[in-house]
Image (cartoon, rainbow, N blue to C red; front, side, top):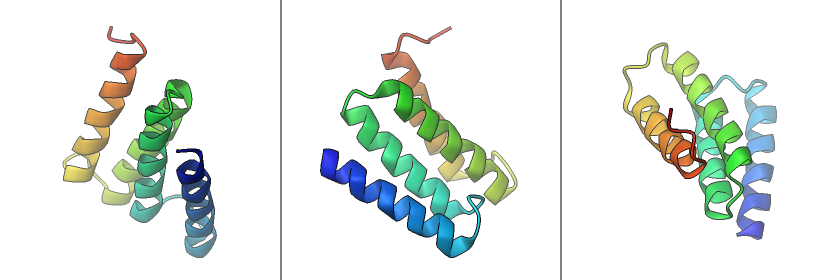
Length: 88
């Protein structure tokens, strides 16, 4: 999974450069993917950070919380928080 993390970080950097901003749905998707890989590696704190970034960017990019990608981000973030024992 370490190679996957490296490649996802590289992809994320390229997207941010290409769009000239983090505030793009495609960048949010990359943060989400990176969060999944970090979760699988057991790096839950870092996964939480990436998933929160993804969530924040998605809400801004779509202009609402009422979007399927935003709902998905909430679900995955909830799973990571649960795995960390941050349930309440």
